Amino acid sequence: MLSWSGILITSIFFESYQVALFSIAARLSLISTIALEAVNLVVAPLFSDAFKTTRINELRKISLVSVKFLLIASTPILIIFLIFANEILLLFGAEYTEASNLLRILAVGQFFNVITGSVGFLLIMTDCEEKVKKVNVICTILTIIVSVIFAKVFGLYGVAVGCALGLTCQNIFLVIMVKQQLGFNTINIFEKITK
Picture 1: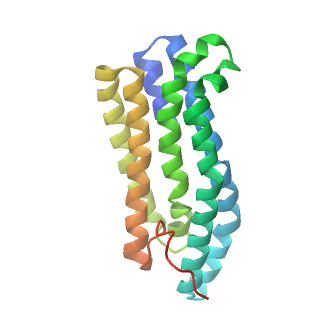
Picture 2: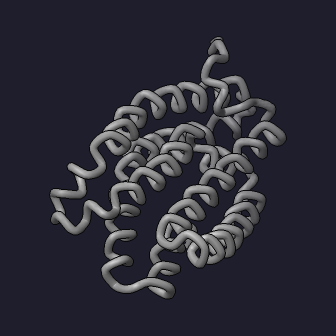
């Protein structure tokens, strides 16, 4: 619901061409999450195995290595979206270039989602799925409320900012939860990884 909230809100408050603009920007911004999806498939069973055998240091190491990889993989995509948003959207038609700033806003939100790492899977694989569910429900509700309010004040840009903020808040809460539950910070990329 969180990922679809922006499109649903725009379909309620805006005309169909504006929904199309928001939709293309939202879908394109998801390109930066391809690396995260791939990493999730690899690290989820590793998280589970390390937690099951109480190897918390290994759990931390897997998490930090994956976050470093995600930062390296997603930064060029963000830079491309920020610099070449117009050119990318031009591939879909000249009228879609109106969505260039929407793409930039949503891409920044997705970038933050990616660089926090596999925090959702990390918590789910370490017996914290109920807490993850609560965070997801709360952040989805907050995203919808903020996006609706921002839509009325700032138009499509308000919805984009609301969605980006919602995704960012969700990941901040999950990073804090990892620190509370497992004792390490997943976004501390400068931490030395020891064996």
